[in-house]
Image 1 (cartoon, rainbow, N blue to C red):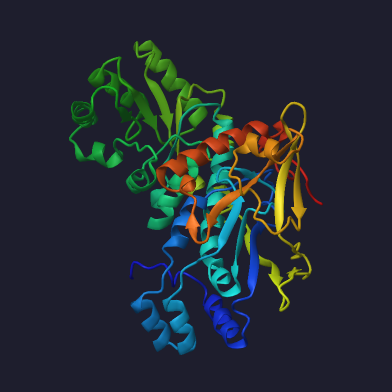
Image 2 (cartoon, rainbow, N blue to C red):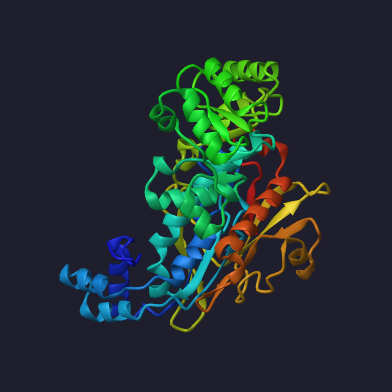
Length: 450
């Protein structure tokens, strides 16, 4: 496999370009929009994630010689289209919701404007990033909301593919997790990393005490010792015997957690290890974390459920053409009208209507928002409302992400990831309390069009 991501796409993206070039419509200026018709079943809000990754991938989206040769050998498109692909560089504009923002059905999350050919070819790339990352972030945000401020670690690398593992770690961090076990996510995106030892390390040694002693000598007494390889009660006692009452934490990865955690806390206190923390890491999801809210758990480690969207591995977003210029240069709104898959045509902007307590009450999508891309000033959430001359009860949601093929540096790399994390925290403060109920329900606020 080469380093290019150009063929990580669907064949029909290229065959559409091929046909449009032949018909003379490839250069028609067009507006595409990524949005979700509905939230995953039972969810009350979603969290936008993947924007920073998406922008970086778009700037790197190139058809190099190996990709072009494969397309030629398999006769996917005509030679003239291969020449067009060889020179492909996205040169259009993109705007959308800030990464980390909450979203609802119909929210215009990402809008892409450029020629039909250069914008349509990005469909699979944009959706593959947004659908997975937003699914993880939305699940992680639910877990974060019920953890009640206790640290959360993402540990799902072994439950998804190697590329998705990095994306999952980043998305979970944006959504409120505090660290990841994935080192590449730390290097590439600045996500704090954590990890000590697995059961294999204990099994390697002649005794549990020997394993604990080796770990403490290597990592210091503030480390976390895994105490459930054999017998938890004996493991806790051995951990304190080896590390002393200043042991940083014990980790539990099995058993009836509410009962086990209570017993371990009582045992630690009786042994004098009153400051030793308890971390649990046993197939956790938002429901089990909520069930442990009254238990003396100090931190959670989540793997499978966060990396797979806690039952919803894709956010259900679509990418649709919503406007194009006609032969006279006028904008024409276009929309799909198929049953249960209706889309709303036209370039859009969006604001979130807030009440006097700064609580979100409505998502307002403004159709046919004009020639200029919304959010051109790049103002922050509070300033944008004032700049638009509107009441403070409305907050602008759309900002510029890319202009003439050049991404806004604010959204990229580790700094962009931290900014998205801050945005997620701010957005959660605005949501009504019913948004955080775990039981199935409708979107926390309605979406209206005007």
